[in-house]
Image 1 (cartoon, rainbow, N blue to C red):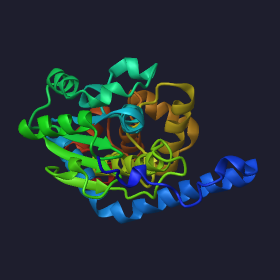
Image 2: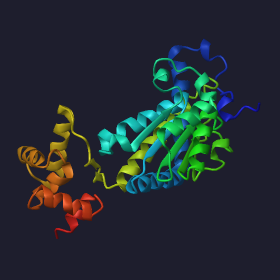
Image 3: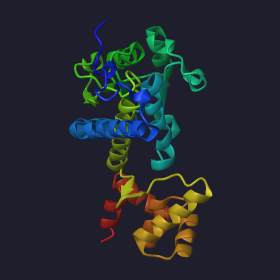
Image 4: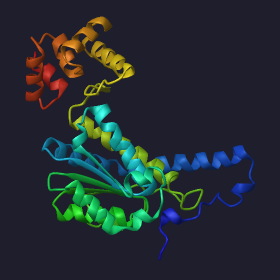
Amino acid sequence: MAAGRTEGRHEQARGLDERQPVDALKVLADGQKAAAAVVDAALVDIAAASRLAADALLSGGRLVYAGAGSSGLMAMADALELPGTYGIPHDRIVILLAGGAASLVDLAGGYEDDRDLAVGDAVAAGIGPKDCVISVSASGSTPYALAIADYAKEKGARVVAMANNPGAALFADADVAILLQTPPEVISGSTRMGAGTAQKIAFNMFSTLTGIHLGHVHDGHMVNLKADNIKLKGRACRIVSDISGVGIDEAERLLARSEGSVKTAVLLAAGVEDAGAAKAALDRSGQSLRRALQTLG
């Protein structure tokens, strides 16, 4: 079996275990920086993937993250943040991690080779034509990730593939292919390192741009956040205050009238009669706070 780039040997790895600790860390840090730098070459594809994801959510579909091992953990980390950060309902986000909850205790490698497990997971998730599936694998050849992508394609879903090896099998039938061509790992094959770093950055950018497309970002603020703890309630007050210009106490009062909705509170501060009218304005604007404010003239 031919080894991909993710299994290659790093030029500075020889003698790593004999170096002084700080020198070894410098090599590791340089490897992380080199991995992060490759994301720039994938910006066009990340943008296209974000558009597919937003369109799926806007049309009533779901965003399905799928992967195994370290790559699956990167996908899961991104997916878990979306409801809190952008207010996307939990039932619109699906996570397919090879091995499921068992992998959160013991990230055993056998699950990633099980195509039948992948198909069973995809069937149980009910993947269909309205959904957008993003399947990730550092090598691009992980059977679990491939089987999920193949099933999704058969069911008419849009498929985004993310991998770190050029010419990856995962890219073959994808609607969008995100290549993160990271250098060989300092610890050969340990793709939780460089490959995982590039994936984490790409996922962050992918989901953030998706949030922007959905109208959930305004001047760098997460205006559709779910404020379900003290820290986030304070953040919501500061966001309303910053956008509308009202004081923190007034922002808190407006949020109470808005059942915690930042967008609604900002519109109330701008003179909209009540929460119902504010919600109607947001519906007309496609949930874009900026467009809703502009209609107030």
